[in-house]
Length: 339
Ligand code: SAM
Ligand code: DTB
Ligand code: SF4
Image (cartoon, rainbow, N blue to C red):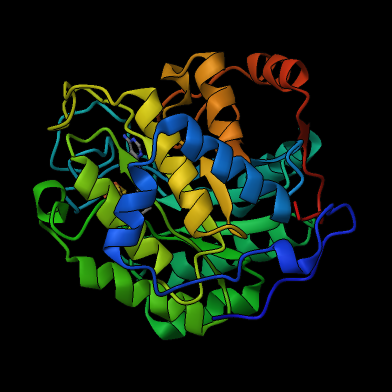
């Protein structure tokens, strides 16, 4: 059990109405939540969501690929793996100035979090890591939350990132421990857990989630959610991606996930980890406006904006602006949290 977070000014209910955070969920409990009738589940998730977050506010995050393609890992979903002929153009590490300019533009466009991704298996000490540390410092100086996703990290590297001003480190578990080896063979689930522990130890917040629509079962989604919700403390940020199917990858023509399954997964994440930011991440281009609305109702309170994710397309900004207007949603401003 953990201490309750500070109550927001606009909270209608008192602290007593807030459920204490739990990191000791059993898989059976997660299963029971996940399998509730969908509308019950979404209603329950929305009720809890409102106890911790302003339901009209959604955080806008901007991604930038700072090193693209040619990754030695064999993640079956990933267009950047060197194992698959996807046609993604390789790009070496960007210059600090270019990244700084992109971050400034993102802030101007309403993003409050800037995430830099590199197609690395792991971080290596040396000139390139020093450059990334400089990027982190520069982006942090803009008052943005700064997130990086660079592959595996040592404790020492995590400490250096923390000192440079990194807010969050993204490192996804992607799926259940049982299904993992069907998707990735070049690293282990435990490798992921070790990096997450190093990030946590360095005092950086954890961004950790997964992907749906890779041919996994309900039980795999339950297994992933169980892993995430038993991290102690919970990841502050939980990205739920819907697979963007990329030709050339082994998952290029897998059966797409049902958006209702996405909403179910998000609602379950919200109920298990009520304080975390739940990010409706990759895959929004294949959602209708109505499906996206259901995901917000289920407790998603963050999206990636901009024409590109890392290498794949994302909805047009105009369409996102119209969606926000029509749903009565507002972007969380810089330096503001949602609860
Ligand atoms: N190489 C680093 C790593 O794997 O941690 C960072 C970059 S990697 C592209 C970040 C995350 O993007 C992956 O963990 C995966 O969850 C997600 N991702 C990659 N390709 C995707 C796709 N085609 N559809 C949905 N999510 C994807
Ligand atoms: C996350 O969970 N999703 C984002 C972010 N973390 C780094 C990445 C999505 C990548 C989608 C595939 C691509 O654009 O290359
Ligand atoms: Fe490499 Fe990350 Fe893509 Fe896996 S997900 S192939 S580690 S860039």
